[in-house]
Amino acid sequence: MEITRYSPAVGAEIRGVDLSRGLTGEEFKEVHKAFLDHQVLFFREQKEIPPEVHVEIGKRFGNLHFHPAAPQMEGHPEIFVIHTHRDSKIANGEFWHSDVSCDEEPPLGTMLQLHLLPPVGGDTLFSNMYQAYEELSETFQKFCDGLSALHESEHVYRGRYSDRGVDDAGKVYPSSVHPVVRTHPETGRKALYVNRAFTTRIQELSEDESRAVLDLLLDHCEQLSFQTRFRWQKNDVVLWDNRCVQHHALWDYWPEERKGRRVTIAGDRPY
Ligand code: SIN
Image (tube, rainbow, N blue to C red):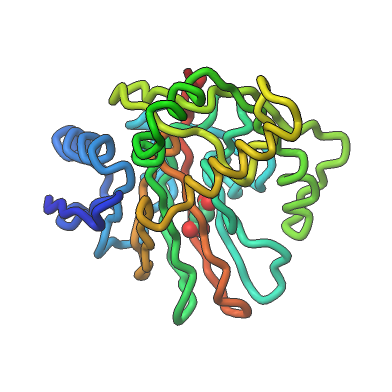
């Protein structure tokens, strides 16, 4: 397996492992270490992964997460099909976020393979939330260490998948309060944990203060120097750590089509 850094801020590219066959114990150990070291892994030169193998690889990292809003793949409820085309009303992930941070126990990580790509465009951007925390002044770090924030999803998910047959009448979408700075349970490092999609309010501040501090933090998290931008090739697989990165999927390719499958790994309560 060949692992090379992808950018100064975040990510590594991996060649020499065939995910369509699953992972051996040794391969999993190496991938897991690289995942913790680099936060996002870009697996190149892949074949299409059969859904059951995709699910099996995801389960090596932990239990799988079931999305509160998105439609499930027939026969494989753990798989979320990402599909954007000429008639789509929305594209998944076209804003900076950490997946489903509105859940009480938000996903640890996500593994996405794209099988169909537009001729150009459809890149995914990743931003390093360890670095975002570490580059705040010490005074502001201490201030943020004592804060918690509300993450809501009603405004994100209500009606979002109606064009894919999801009727969400009567459904209650999750919301949760999480620390603004979370400690990664495996590396022990601190990361900023607020994002533009789901985080709506800092609990300990007045409404005006909350808006001002949240705007400052969200702008800060999206700084170019914390980011990398991934240009997909057919069947590439990306595995990202939602506990310490945010991502943004660009929908700059309409009316072209982009399609793939995602497996999401369950996480624990941020602290
Ligand atoms: C997502 O947020 O799961 C979408 C990522 C992508 O489509 O690149």
